[in-house]
Length: 288
Figure 1 (cartoon, one colour):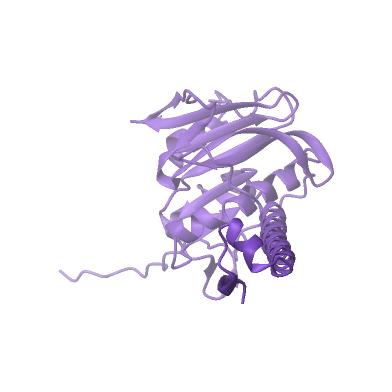
Figure 2: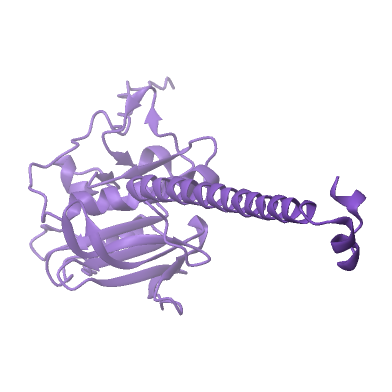
């Protein structure tokens, strides 16, 4: 019996970041999103240099994370407002990343953050991936995707209007609410930082912002704050040098005054007779 082998079509490879859409045409939800992302990224620079001296990490800001092939492709992605992925190259094959594709890199972000314009209900949506009785695909909620599919270790929801921060940590196969520490911050252990809410002015907006602190509770500065600190330090150094110069000049002045006093006293004593000097217990030879 002769067996025939039918011709098979080659497998179609999963698309990569250059073949998937990198935007869906929607507007940014609020004016705080862009500066908030910049603030988080900028202040984290020193920590990331310590964690990744080789530069192997990437940060996404409102970029798509693809986790499932769908049609259209955008339906298989979530776009966190801010996320960090360790131990991956910042570029791929010399190209700027257009999105982050889970099935290509197999490394989940350590943390994702959502800046909620509303009450956070969309960001807390636990709807699982499923189909309706009519067979229509039911879009899963962000919370469920981050927890059950992407398996992201830390998930934060920042309510922009109230300045409230909710943090969740993946424990087993479920997100557990995190409890802030004594400083009111949440410890993000793999990153060696704490995350919390800071009130102040950034890019001409005075409100509450998400900020990083180090494990000792020191606020991680942004470049602008570092430059200001350097200016203040230089000014302190200048004032310290000025103070030292002033003290030295004062010391020299006092010494000169004492010298002049001694000279005047010697001149007066020289005008006395040997008998008067002897009466004062002064040897005339000492005045030479």
